[in-house]
Amino acid sequence: MSEATAVEMLEAEHRVIQKMVAGMSVLADQLEGGEPVDVSLLESIVVFLRTFADRLHHGKEESFLFPALIRRGVPSQGCPIGGLTMEHQKGRVMVGELADAIRGYAAGEPPARENLVKSLRVLVAFYPNHIWKEDYLLFPLAGKVLTPEDQQDLMDKFETVERELGLDVHEGFDKVAADLERKVSGIVSSPKEE
Image (cartoon, rainbow, N blue to C red; front, side):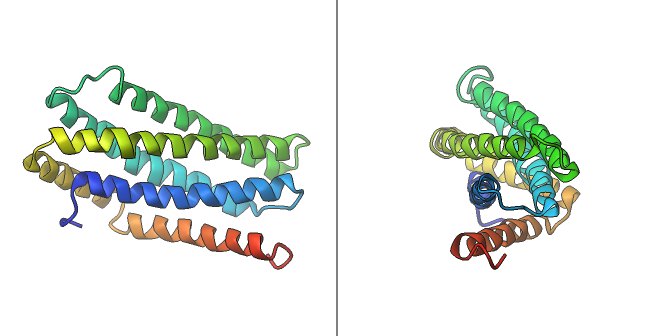
């Protein structure tokens, strides 16, 4: 892990989030087509989004990367830090709405399927745009303004966050995303077998 820079670590986390989002899109299609979706699978998505995407990934950005950039002269308001912080807050609200929609779906409430599809679609639209802004605006900026010492300090802080969440956090959630990817690829290629 220490061979990568802090920014490269955040970029790698984006790839895991993208796997989950791709799976969410397929599940939304499946629900729209009238097929059932396992509630525990849906709940694992919420756990992933709250723990990996928000607490781990966004937590590193908000607690460590953004302050490091601000110390190097990047404005805290506006683009990119202010806008991305607002998007993180918006994402938390959307994940809460997804959790509510899953509860309704599990309880068999009449509009639940439509609410669940809508919640999934909103998140599927949100994450690629958010990730793009970070990959192509924030991270290149960080690469220009952060010193090698800043990057190492961030890596040390990131590793502390991961130890606090559990040293296997990446491996565990990468497996969750890969499992979803496998499940939905089975849905796409042979929907009657799942």
